[in-house]
Image 1 (cartoon, rainbow, N blue to C red):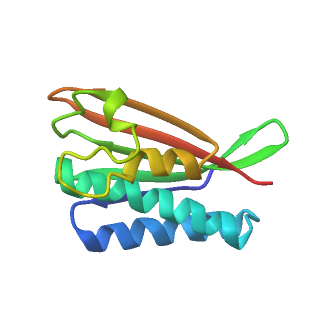
Image 2: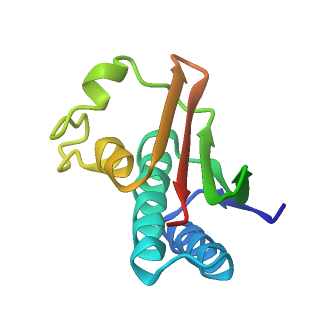
Length: 132
């Protein structure tokens, strides 16, 4: 299983994470469009780490489910956590006066999306995109 771990602490790390996701997707036969969707979803969750948690990690890996091949992205941090998951997943909701596209946008771009968070202990987002 190909896996790349990218520590996320600053804006430049977001670029590194995007590139890692795009490269892994390309190496596993994803279309250019899906490579872009994966990179964009990574950018959204990585930016949340930088803005809200200050540091964390993104792991991109190849996954298989029977005959399906996919890319899994796990974004985790030990930040403050998300107080209201339902609100955080609403379009336009933001606690930092941004556009609020992050989590709901990433969910729309990927095929599978799971969010867990515990106040005072951090947040983990697990996303998958399956090759068409």
